[in-house]
Length: 309
Image 1 (cartoon, rainbow, N blue to C red):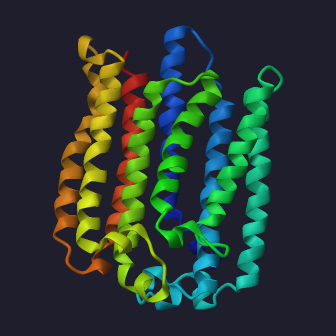
Image 2 (cartoon, rainbow, N blue to C red):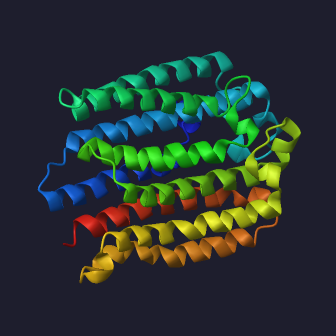
């Protein structure tokens, strides 16, 4: 069991929950202002679906990189994954991917049933399509003849699914509406998620070169990937600030809503430390740090909007 828990890579779970928390609690704040109803059952099921998607993605990545020999070229113990190390066989991991695909789809159906049936059947079917797309995206990063993670397209998919779909989709589950300003927090979470992925690809840049995994970091080179990383870590708080401005908080006395801006200091510190790294392998600890900061960004935004008015 311990091998399966390690393969699930629990340190990635806070990152996956960030978009749901952001979208759900912005919806709660907006519904509160309009006298609407916020359903905790939708929130609980959305968290379950996201956790299942993330574990599915991690198992699929372990399987895909393992059977392609990518992990075998990674010398760090941190990336000694289950299939590559032989702790779990490729067949067992493939069966786990199938199992979690089924569980993810079943949980998605339950979530959408609670959110949309019987009044919003068109939305129910549209979101089933999104759910299937999310499952395919989770698997397709490293699995298949042309996995998009090996083509340098991982960043785009992470931005879309961890950012826009997660935040805007969870917001829609509660409000049944789409608001253009939600693209701002959606993009903020998406960029933080891209920052984590880019750190991962920068760390593995040498081994990926040997295995033929052409990540975006490898395509643009370590130096340019470092500049790209700094941009990704700089913009999210600006986007959150824009969201608060668009919603009129600069003209109110509710200064508590800006509590999320305290992340400026730790993010500045992390950026300086990342820029000082010369050996790519030294980037590994920052993956967890940036993931936790993404989670904290979502929680503080939710806290500021919902508990101080």
